[in-house]
Length: 56
Image 1: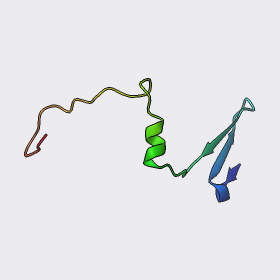
Image 2 (image 1 turned 180 degrees about the vertical axis):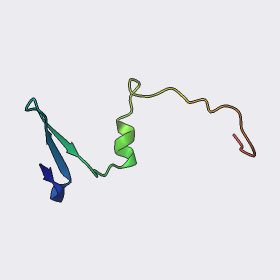
Image 3 (image 1 turned 45 degrees about the vertical axis):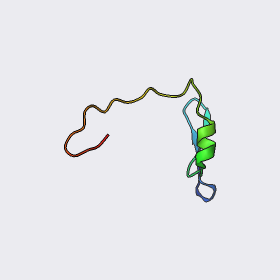
Image 4 (image 1 turned 120 degrees about the horizontal axis):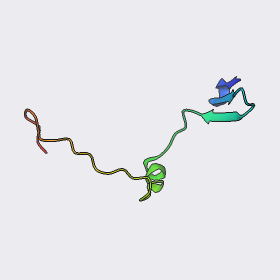
């Protein structure tokens, strides 16, 4: 069942479990940054040495 008007998608699996997905939700940068914790942060990414005329 799709509720396009409210941008909600409802999915019912074969085991009669209901899962609702909300899409197109708007987040502010502050809201996203508030959710960063030591547990969910990833390590830095090493992109290697500069190639071409890149400046790091």
